[in-house]
Image (cartoon, rainbow, N blue to C red; front, side):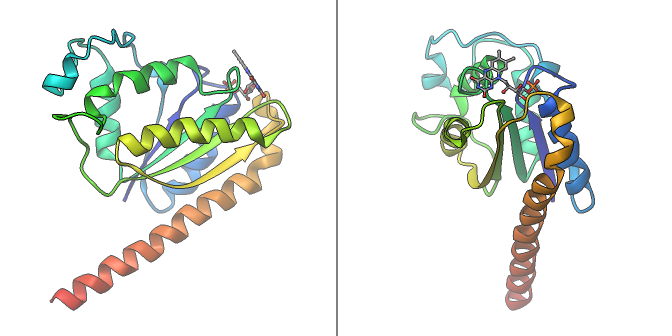
Length: 198
Ligand SMILES: Cc1cc2nc3c(=O)[nH]c(=O)nc-3n(C[C@H](O)[C@H](O)[C@H](O)COP(=O)(O)O)c2cc1C
């Protein structure tokens, strides 16, 4: 099983990166794990030309394919996103716009291999969970159109800098344990089905 942990923040050493490190370390015990930051990649904004609605390909040529390769590689994707003005950071939104060739609302469209599962961790400085829910909705909407099944989400309020993450480590580890338990069951089910097919 392969896990991709995506830092949706442009900050490579902030609170989001700290959470990405905890999640990666936890999942590494059981899965092959990669973590990437949206800021590792250079890409243009979607031009809205809709050529991809006819061709399933983008007219632009940049690092988007490299991000997509990571998504294609993974069985599970954990998106860790801070709230920037009550939603996902612009850099991550710009990436989502560029995923239009893979969006299942038009034919033809490009597609990932099936069976991928997605998770969301949202964090913010303010105290209300309502804003984390906006982030869940944005990322779940993206997962839905990429046919990635959204399986669970975790919201962390009152987090501004990475120092605040240490106090939330238990919640993050518990969330990772739930991911692993789900996969333990999933793997057993696959094994069981395999035996029955023999
Ligand atoms: C441009 C910007 C906008 C932000 N907007 C919000 C906001 O609307 N609500 C909130 O609770 N926190 C907001 N924050 C705080 C971040 O969600 C919080 O500091 C988070 O831990 C940032 O993680 P990062 O440094 O890894 O990107 C904002 C931070 C930045 C830099």
